[in-house]
Amino acid sequence: MLRRVFSVTVVAAVLLAAGVVGRADALDDARGEAVAELRKIAQQTNDAQMRTDHLQGQVEAAERDTADRAAVLEVRPAFVQKIASLSAAISAAEGKVDTAAHRAAAQSAQQTVLAERSDPAVVVAATATVHALAEKVGEEVSTWQAAQYARPTGPAWSSSGPDGYARVRAALDRVGGAGVGLYESSSCAGGTAPACANSNGYIKYRGDIAGWSADRLNWAMAHELAHIYQFQVWGSLNASGSYDALFGGDPEFLANCMAVVRGYPGSVGCNGDQQAWAAGIWVGVVR
Image 1 (cartoon, one colour):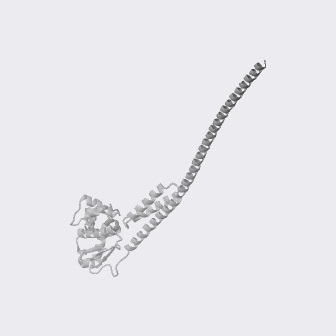
Image 2 (spheres, one colour; image 1 turned 90 degrees about the vertical axis):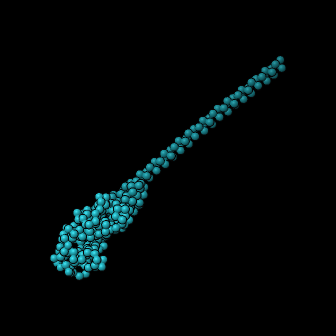
Image 3 (spheres, helix red, strand yellow; image 1 turned 45 degrees about the vertical axis):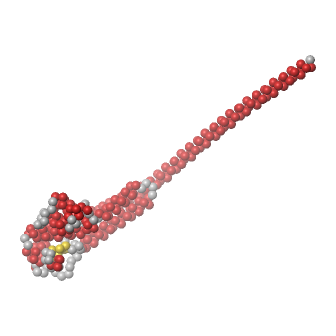
């Protein structure tokens, strides 16, 4: 009897121990699942925070970009005004001074401003550049205008007399040279040339040409006036490959073609391409 009771007790203890072990295993499994779930939640929370930080960074970057663009746009109107002033100055300078370099510099400044999105200082600097260009063009035009009144010392005529001078003067005015200084002189090419143009903007003539025929006199004045216009674009003219190709770099040949364009042909002809190119010099354009 005692042995049976002991056996039952042992069996019960074994069953109880097995239950305890099973419950412990179940608790371990539950704890593992809970830990895994917590880790998952922590990762999700971390991902959400990272997304929030990323979005916040994007918002801040967009705000900075908007502020930068607004600052650039704020200073652009001043640049546009200076471009308009420069454009007016260049238009007023046509036929007087060479503005090719000024145009190129202005176009470069415009490209810089169009490309700038964040730094207003770049636009301010470009505005100052264009302002300086406009002032430079104005100064060069003033210099040209002053040169129109430059004249050699002494009377405007000598051997040709006032009537001869008036005839040459009328021819120069007729071909478009009204306002260009005209003086009699025997100094052109040491007296061998009947007339010559001075880079200061005036023309000298030898006294005997006052007796030339009207057509020949008109051509001579148109030719010399052409040189005056050449001087105004002298730098870009001599740098032009087309000038060299079409005229061999010869200003005399070009002057003849320019006279033809104005309707005063001389003894040297030029073809259509040469005339079309020469016409540009009358308006300050070198192609």
